[in-house]
Length: 133
Figure 1 (spheres, one colour):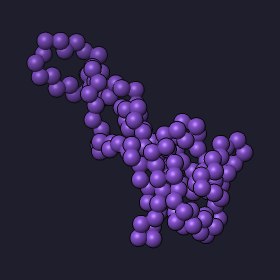
Figure 2 (cartoon, helix red, strand yellow):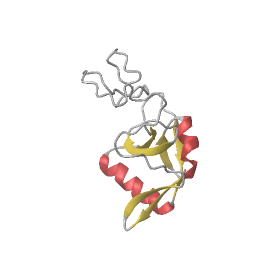
Figure 3 (cartoon, rainbow, N blue to C red):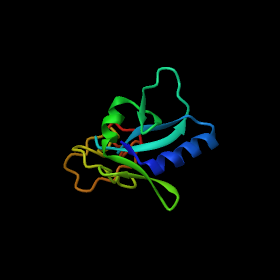
């Protein structure tokens, strides 16, 4: 991760104003993907945190996040902090899956051979991917 000198000054001012002492970074994963985006916040260093010094700014993040953050630059544009992630991915809005066997009827009845089955049972069409939605 890179923090430009201009961003460092603005971050230091913001941290002081908000009474925080570090930037906190974490990974956000898409519903059905191992791809991730980095999310940032401000906070205070706690015991056990892994702290990285990036251009004089204390950044708390796990090693996995630190390695993923290699493609991120924090810079200033129009007097605002900006985050450029060269490896950012767009997560689909809404919930869409393409798992084999996804959205099978869970009513317990055998509907094999029925062309257009419209099950009226409560548990119908629950996602089977194992992710909480």
